[in-house]
Image (cartoon, rainbow, N blue to C red; front, side, top):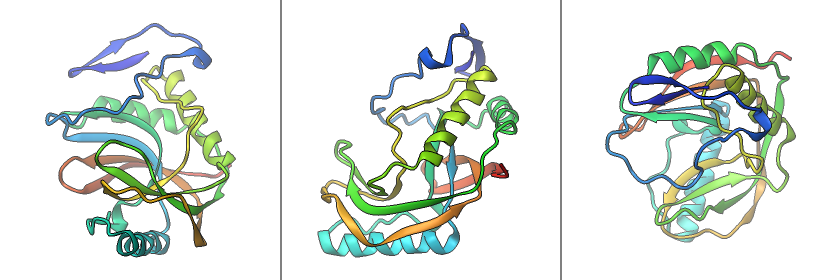
Length: 212
């Protein structure tokens, strides 16, 4: 399958998707050479993103957390990582976009009913998630991974995939707590996100509507 080694695309042996090596999932150390991060995600509706920011503000005040909230424009729910690169790899973007054109799924409701901190070293992400894992999100996660595998791309598949939306990062831990009202919206598309590392900015390099 195709992977990145420096600026070159390398061929790896094809193998069954069910037993494919999806890479090392351990936390990665900061790499100053990384300027571009690519991943597939779903985006909340604008009003929903603003509601998520407000939830973050309330929790920050209650627990004395960082005021460095994630902008509503950066709110997203990650589906599948693509990779981190010193610069935008146009060949990878082209290959991913071609593979994603084969994805078929119906629109579905996304719902987060609780907030919690993930254990992740010093900077713990405060996230919104759900007690019940979304079957539709899991199906989409698997389908994207399969399409990338079929196209010969490095892919990520996690059988314990837990959809979540990160609000902020802080060294303090917020215990899991139920929201007064769930955050809900209808997912109608997924996108290829180009995160410009260090700039606090996202570009969307591809959009694919969920049309069934």
